[in-house]
Amino acid sequence: MAFEYETIDDLVSYAREAEGEYLKDIDKQNMLENTNVKGKVGTIIEASYFGYEINSKPEPDFADVGVELKTTGLKKLKNGQLSAKERLVLNIINYEDEVKIDFEDSSFWKKNAKLLIFFYTYTRDKDGKPDYRNFQIVKTVLHEFTGTDLEIIKQDFEDIKAKILAGEAHMLSEGDTNILGACTKGATAESLRIQPYSETPAKQRAYSLKQGYMTALVRKYIKDTKMISFTSPEELEGKTFEELLHDYFRPYIGKRDIDIAYDLNYRLSRSKNKLALLASRILGIQGTSLNHIEEFSKLNIKFKTIRATKTGTMQESMSFGNVDYDEILQEDWEESSLKMEMESIKWLFIVFQEDEDGNPVLKGIKLWNVPESILDDELRNFYNEVKRILQEGFEEWPVGKQRRNNFPKSGFNGVCHLRTKGTNREKSMVTLSDGQRIPGHAFWFNSRFVKNLVQELID
Image (cartoon, rainbow, N blue to C red):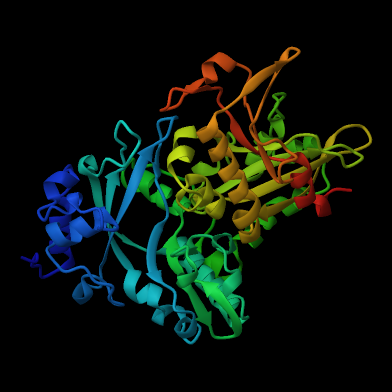
């Protein structure tokens, strides 16, 4: 029997009654036993908790009050923080229809303006597989888009629309936008769709809320985390977020670090990460975590300071996350956390170059995201090679006082490689589910690759 309600408040109150419940207790139709059920969590909550038939209607699930039902998993990171497991996939983008309408009449806004979100813990069993029965609903919220979020989403919608109008729907990428993404939906040739202004078929895509945005919602609604706002809706009506970001750094470009510190009334640190700390001060925060700034957290922007010598050389590679061996063994590239992170992260490169006296001088900034071409080629092949090595057996051997192994090196594809991070080898050792003992590794972008990305800022 379908749940009956009269108002949104009735709907939200009933949803909150599910908090603390496990999926095995909610499932009244034995869907957990059906291996053919896709989107198990959402399907079970729709059918068993609310009692309505599964559908793919263009209007919201609770159309009379304009509310769409969504579920999303969360996980605990090694540092203890909570994170969204993945992006939140919304409705399919119809390339032919969407270019004819404004944001307020778009399929995204009509269906998703109000989201009733069920947050649940994503857990794995002893074999590393999803333990659906013990997924627990920890929070239900009614989320509406307001303020700077809404202004950024409107800009994202226009960017997606502009690419379709240009006949470039086949070139859409999640990295094109900030909060509202155009993620792939279906990975086979059958999922290709026609587009109106080009004869080139385009991948089927759906609107989505990026993983960084969902993580910010997790921390806001579940941890009640308070963050500093970087912009205002009024500012974003006249400029993009990237333009506002350049406005912050522009007064200091061409200045030495010591002069920037003087202008900011800040005592320059002597630590190894002094340039990162200085960049944070320019942005008005302490420390090097941009998660304290609401928009940076929601847009999943990570910043890296890059230091070049006076001749323009740059020796350091750039790490972008630790390797989760078990996940690589169990997840294909399309479903991997690495792919999702590389699709959603925007990198803010803050570039310094030494002057004749060796003083770091701020040369400029650049926002960059991994393009679709590198995701589909170099990163996919890299991931699959690491997976092959883990499946067939990791090998390591001594070379003098050093150790070598059969993981991909910087020459593998010219973009990235694996190597250890940190000096304590024993503390980093990881035991895989098959018993292999492997030292912890991190993913790294090659130094030459990073230098090419910021070459226009270096003398």
